[in-house]
Length: 280
Image (cartoon, rainbow, N blue to C red):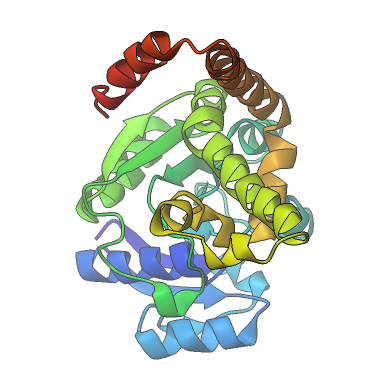
């Protein structure tokens, strides 16, 4: 057994899905959960994801802490609980930004906390424990970022746990993670939100815009249903990388706009052929 007791701080979609996945590995003897939303906590308990509800002070009794809350709120929780965390405890998160939280834990020079920045590339525009699935992470990449204070033994231990839930661990540094995710995750979210905002603005003058929304628009804007608070936190923490990603996208869009104005359809077609044949 890899861990004795784990606490899931935040029993939403990802936190509850992780708890369910950990249960199936049988590598954690006891999983407790904490959430400020009592309904979310009750749902996770009813699903069997956690063994019992916990108080935040119970982090002093565990050897694995998983922060599955919006990234900004982790700072607030830590401010009140950092002194409670036992030395040699493994602490991780599931946030979509890594640089700021790694920098935070690297500051704790006087306390032996094995922090591992975690980011499962799995999820949904749906939220809450009722949408949780034990197989959510199966065959999905799970990024791991080792903090300077993390002992390699504990890093390896947690990496084994992640492999046991069927995920594929990838080791990255925090800066590279945030730069890449600004393009592959954060930019699509921005585009999805503001495509919907464009529709909202146009439908003020003509309701037919709403009537004529097709599956293509719905598919493209599926992400716009995601939790706004979670994304505000991400936008704050990865602001500069996201701005660069937007500038690169604007450059491509302006090239297309210019070609369209100038009737350069063969150039546009060449681009579209390259794009449609690009595999990922």
